[in-house]
Length: 362
Image (cartoon, rainbow, N blue to C red; front, side):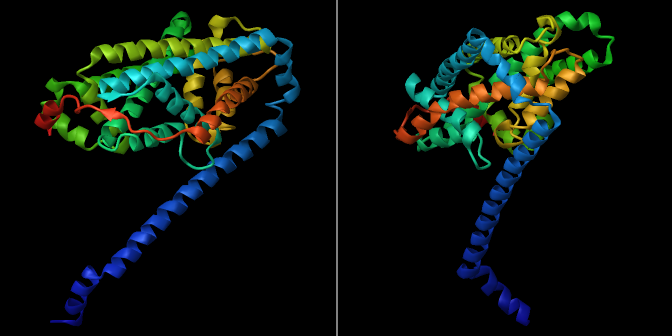
């Protein structure tokens, strides 16, 4: 036996070496999270500095919104009400998954998510915070509880894109213009891909084909999680339809809220010329690229309105997004009170839904 053969079993069975390797992996993951958080915060600072220095965001112009306090108040109200309705939507999804939970409890978790979306210094967004809290409250059904957050987010995004499709219908007459064609084509393609994807992963008939099963098994982590969630909820099409309808209602309120902010800034352009850009802008603003989407959201809105050749008068698309960020920031502050006073309580969980169907497909 060679010296290498004699040493390899000892190396493989050395508990100290295994412990050190696991600690190194944990430390590496921790530093990776810190680096990611630092990049997001640094990106937000750099971009906001650029926006102020270049004049794309001018506080003098933004402060003109104070001359229309009624529109500002209405805009705030239209962004506040959706939080209550979204809590009802998530409660429906939780109960469909077998969890007995009160609306107030769901509202607390939802508002915690809003708070961390704006104030988390780490790389964890509001959805992950909501998932962590609800999973910790359901020790006997953690995976099932976490899936509800993914379905809730998917339905919300799908409804937002659907509204963008509807808002773009009046622009079909301008489809020959390259800018309009690109925007409308991208939105409709994204919505159709979401519909087809949801149908494929939740259809028993399609999942019966070996090729489809093989492709689903190769999905990346987040898409695999969403696929598992949609399989669970396919037994509750009514609850999904109600959730989608509630999402349409809340996103319509948010679009009207942005219109109120635009009117408070005296935007001269007719509504029909830019209303289809608002749901696209809200979708882009939800992407977790920088800290709280500060900087990236403003630049995305500026580019979006310029690409759509929309005349916003004396203000810029970046300033409209900046005013929206300020509004959302102040509303989410109340989530900090919930964070300080929230206490974990176990949520009652019934038996998993459609367990027998899931086992047949495995």
